[in-house]
Structure formats: C-alpha cells, structure tokens
Length: 133
Image (cartoon, rainbow, N blue to C red; front, top):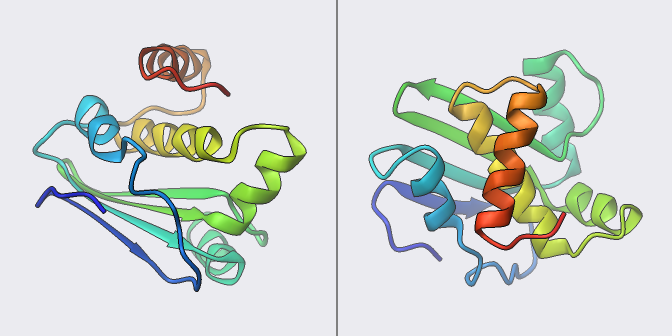
C-alpha cells in the first residue's frame, strides 16, 4: 500500500487486491499535487449504487466516483466489481483500466468536466505513464 501521509487506500470489499505495484502515488502527485489529501476507497456494487443514487441521482452502480471536499482534499471510490466487468467487456487489461479510472477521477477532482480537453489530458497522462486503454 502507499507510503504517503497525504494518500490513503482502504477497501470495503472482501478479497485480496493486488494493487500495491500500481503507480497510485505517482499519478496522484502528478495530477493533483503532492500536498493534495486523497482517500481512495475500493467498494462493491451495493455501495457504488447507493452513493451514485444519493449524490448523482442515478439509480445504477458506477465504476468510479470522485468527491472534491475542499481545494486540497478529495475522495475517490472505485467499484472493483464493475471495473472488472467493464475491463472484460472492453477487452482492456484490468490494471490499465483501473489506472485509467483513477486518472479520470483525479482529473475530476482537479476540476475537469467531461470534454475533449479532459480526454486530451487523459491521453497525455496515459502516454506518459505508458498505460494502454
């Protein structure tokens, strides 16, 4: 797990996640900065649907949700089950798709809205970190 006082990872689901080798800290520092306090939580379908309904008024599970709390604090929730399903359907490597969702969520925390500008920034970061999506 990360060794950074401004970044924490927790999970609300059972099972082992082999994520310790993923570059979460480097991506977080590159996109939102070293001084940004970030909590990354891995969740399942039930909590994902509940959060999506409560905060986005969408009665379906989401693959990832990001919540800016202040200018320097935020939370990201990633639904591992949905991420696995979508990576299989899209024929993506699971770890690469997980990194993509993390990048996408970080950009939302930075203030980006879905747009061609956000997509361009995602592609730039994916290339820099050699992530295939």
